[in-house]
Length: 150
Image (cartoon, rainbow, N blue to C red; front, side):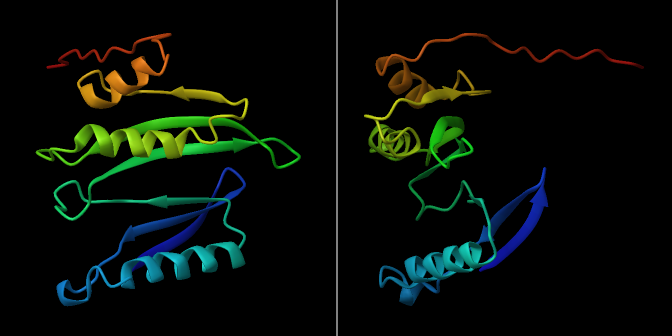
């Protein structure tokens, strides 16, 4: 495992930049045990947000969601903010993977929260379709402009 903890904006952020399990030990709970041990260390160190970096080409990984939960002074969640949500290309169960990730990001669904996403590429059709069917709508779109200087 490759982990780090850094202070950003007065908050402690835990970062997992890679977890590897030898092929003969996969599907035995080793990876889950490593993640749980890491999360316990993060808790002991006062980490407020854990981040995970995954390699898109990792065929073992089904997908990922990059998001942030925001809490008020009393520790109650007020916002769920989605940045990215992807499923591995070529997977027949892409929509199910994305739907599962989104359900986790925006849970609990019975709680009053601000639920939003920013900078989500329109080309991410599965995620866009699921969000739209859940009632999300576009508030603003960004454009990327360039100008040659030479």
